[in-house]
Amino acid sequence: MKKIVSGIYYVGVNDYETDLFEGLWPLPEGVSYNSYIVKGEKTAVIDTVKIHFVDEFLKKVEEVTPFEEIDYIILNHLEPDHSSSLVRLLEKTPNAKIYCSKKAQGMVESLYRITEKVHVVEEGETLNLGDRELVFYMDPLVHWPETMVTYDSREQVLFSCDAFGSYKALDVGIFDDEVNPDDYYEETIRYFSNIVAKYVKYVKKAMEKLSGLPIKIIAPAHGLIWRKDPGRIIKLYEDISERKANPSVVIIWGSMYGNTKQVVNHVVEGVKEAGVEVTVLDFSRHDLSYLLKESWKNKGIILGFPTYDGGPFLKTSYYLHLMKRKNLRDRIVGFFGSSMWSGRALKQAADDLRELDWEIVEPLLEFKGAPTEELLKHAKELGKTIAEKAKQ
Ligand SMILES: Cc1cc2nc3c(=O)[nH]c(=O)nc-3n(C[C@H](O)[C@H](O)[C@H](O)COP(=O)(O)O)c2cc1C
Ligand SMILES: [Fe+2]
Ligand SMILES: [Fe+2]
Image (cartoon, rainbow, N blue to C red; front, side):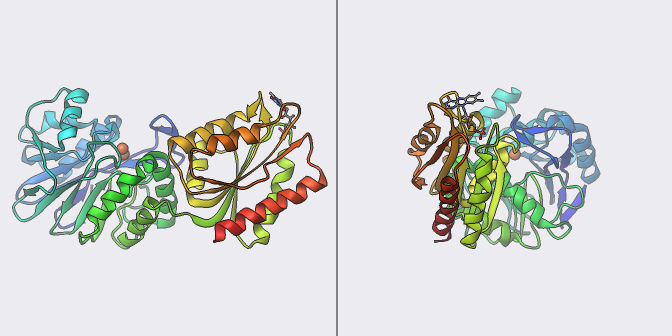
């Protein structure tokens, strides 16, 4: 348990046990489930934690307040990483009423079979805690349709749920001035690209809606609490919701026998010659979570992969599919890769991406077997061309 400001406490937990968030996204440094207590004359708990950590959570809650004095349990979001300790918390809090959105009400019933003592809050509704007030704003689809945020207007704290959240447990501290915030900044981008990116339109709407609120502290449901520089994370979200990318390039390559791999350094050289920053990742050895993050960050994307069973290298196919599912837009992309007989994997990949508005830079550098000197020259040019375009 930690105090954030007068009357507001952190009662979240760290999870170092789950290897894959949502069964998909690696957690090499864990993740936190942040829950908060706001204590006025009345007391509210905001969100809970994943059920696996319920005992630790309840202990922390009890350090702040006797359970009988909890009047409200506010559920910003029903994804089980935040809601699954609800039943256990309710067993201890006979006087608590659930506050959630209309859509969340149905989820509370379908997930936990709870229908009583549920109050549905409206957009802009306030909850008076005596010496302070909480205000609720809907931000549907950031991350699920029922999601809302809660705002403490006296202390100007925004409990933003998944918005502004990140992977990486809170091991050293819970505030941005207690740790190196850069580590969490990167993990915020990864979390965003993996979890929230699909709904970028709704993030934009939410950002516009909340832009008038004076905010001193951002308290999300995962990762750091931003009290020193909330502006930094707000700016990141403004940029992300506009799909703004860095004027830099990511090269993602895959290779079975090294023919495609031989080309990578030449593409890198071309990018560097244009004075542009470049990141290199491997389809086979880097998890898609990171490929997605870097694709979200970089304006230029160069993909190198061989033909495999008449199509793109398998891991590349999944990546291309994911780009469409996550609806990443407005990128400049180039291709290179080896084949032996049928070829056409690069053309298939380019065709596959045409439904997105990516600029595909021709020619597609497909070659038979090992690359020739001529091909390597073209590869360097490809790197340079995409870097120049990314800079603009
Ligand atoms: C499992 C497997 C499937 C392949 N399928 C095709 C194919 O359908 N069409 C083709 O032209 N080449 C195919 N190839 C040949 C590779 O594309 C070729 O060996 C290429 O040079 C490999 O590039 P790399 O050294 O970068 O892995 C296949 C190779 C393997 C090992
Ligand atoms: Fe979520
Ligand atoms: Fe979450």
